[in-house]
Image 1 (cartoon, rainbow, N blue to C red):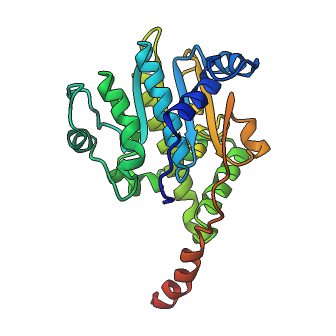
Image 2: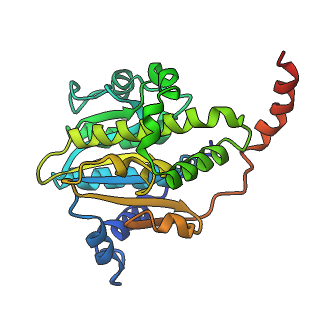
Length: 277
């Protein structure tokens, strides 16, 4: 995980203004278009790059902005499992209490990154809900062939390639179908959790990785057609054209330092293969 870097309060508010339409930091027409693109909505999906600290700061600002206006219904996090919720906690609950009730896995999702997002909702008296597939269901999900029909053949192939590349092209081909089923099951859980939290006139914010936010592959596929969903995707550096077509709005942040995250895995892979019987 890259060193956490957060903007100053002023810059953070300006970034929020660009997304949600305030004219406080700019006089161009762009903020108005952003507001028109994202709101009103029953569900607002925020797709992030997990290793980009500015993206979590952006998410926190949006949550806080909506909460201050009484428009926030709930925050659903990919980073906690479905069934975990802060609904029973008071607005002044400690961060430790919030982590405990969400069964937070700090080794997978550093609280220093996502704690501010969660606490912005808690402090406003708004529930934070886990939306991810529970870990105990992972094995059964990999064998659930009924999930195969949830995507078209073309979308399935795209999802499989995304899983392959997301694991540095090191996974055995035979386990890829099971991994795609897990991805689909996660998208379904995230979508259903967000849909169940909808309140008239308010917005459910769904915080996920960019793959889960894509309209043609991710959680949006499994939202009820009766609900209005909007997608904002944060990209560090220039956004790929394929990503631009998946979102109602792209929030661009500076490119991250070059870092080959796959290098350690490639080094370990030959050793692991030699150790197999």
